[in-house]
Image (cartoon, rainbow, N blue to C red):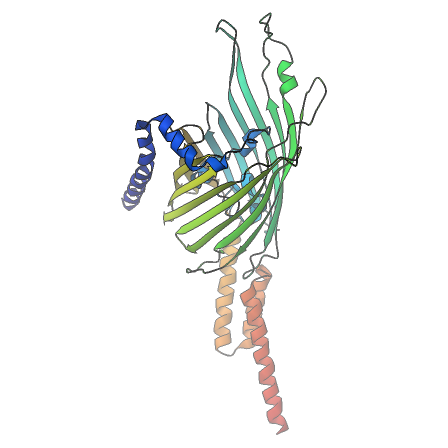
Length: 437
């Protein structure tokens, strides 16, 4: 009953956040868009939309959408595959996820993702995903009759590898990663204007193949941390997304004219108290085909408030172009299944309420015994402290060495051994001095 009460209050709070957006429906569409345009006129970008494979800019959905896509410096779940390839090495558990993102104009993005860390090499991880963006494609003739109908698609397959270098107890390491991706843009065949017959292979000529890579690094450390936890409270991430080329003109002359939506992103997340996480991103798009083309940067920010171990409220704000996006969501975890519901008021496309919704379901498959090992290391360390307090320094060293067999970079045990050895050496010097007297 207690869980139901907490969930109900959180749901009412989320509805309270959404209601202001719902009230926009009563406003004049022209007046609202005009007001928003006046506020963010300086962010209008004439070069926006000049890249191909635009679905690469669409997030998986769910948690990341709820946080305003401020995720480059957070990446605390499998959605790191979309934002920062370095973060696989710092994930706690093996995860399988399904994402559904209802985008604009009846378009949708479906994603299946997987990630895991190796048992024998705990700082090495691998992962990957397949996704498909699709929207209806219908062609009409001069008389308004439907002559062709199919789907425009952009499909993607990705493989990720990351490693956390020099990870220890005090210094959490520097994670680096790479994601290799291949995409296919499927354009349906269209008809001849004169005969009305479908032209075989016409869609293939406008289809495209893309090959690219994402690169990323992530640093973790503690700063102004007002709670007890092994996890660092600050993360900083850097990521280069969609570094590659696309090829068009299959069946004719293959060309590489269309640039991919390449971006350079920097992000930070901070958790001063355990229940609240704040994140922010700065993203700079670049054009690799025409390097002199300047595209305006965009900004994302998000906040997560954890009410209980199984329930969180998320909210985000994103400013890309002249109009903002406001989002909120609920995330709950039930028996290792984490579910997120997101609502986004996307003023870039319209002011109609409830115009974007995304869902995600993540299955947590355990940490391959890493938490059990950490608990054993902690137990060894506590036992060593008792021996140390009783001046049993040799016994303390032995037990701390057992801890290091399980975790060779457990800094408290390393420091404890150094301190115990110093005590032993000092005691011997005192004994030798007394014997000489």
